[in-house]
Amino acid sequence: MTKVDRRIVKTQESMKKAVIELMTEKNFDEITIQDIADRANINRGTIYLHYQDKFDLLDKLIEAHIHELGEMGEWACKLDWSNALVPFFEYFEKNYLFFSTMLASKGAPSFRTRLLDFIMEGFKGEIDKASGRNIDLSEDVMLQYAGTAYVGVIEWWIRDGMPYPPQVMAKQVGALLERSL
Image (cartoon, rainbow, N blue to C red):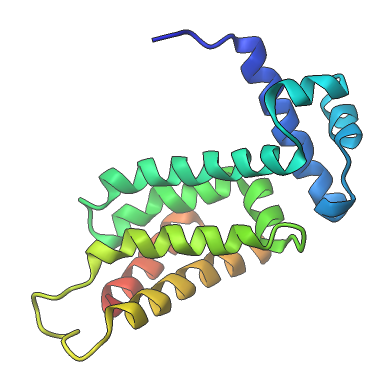
């Protein structure tokens, strides 16, 4: 396994942080590579050593968060809903600036769709088919309903300044998802 140079990681993190901070100030379309370089305190050319353009940087940033959520989902599936959701809400809280910016940004509307697709994919294996309570319901409708509700609650929670701690959110959303799926 090759060891990644910490300077490279630090540079990439500063670029990612810079683009998110800038997105809180202006629309993504208005942000230039020079803006990102200035905010990250690096040369413009350094960005091109790591990313094709600002869209590639944003895409890689989004992918990193979706990947992290995916890794959490692998082991969370073994837990009941409430306990499984605690680490997710803690992750949203820890990465508040990213999620608040991405869910509110007009410049990154694809993020919500990507998050929803990821969540619905994770819910696919969670539909209760054994008890018979969902026998008359379409799996597609159930996934849309549960996924859209979950993303909507995350948006509301973040937009309203996280009025409840992650544990409370996980318990309540977990109970609702258990009733739905």
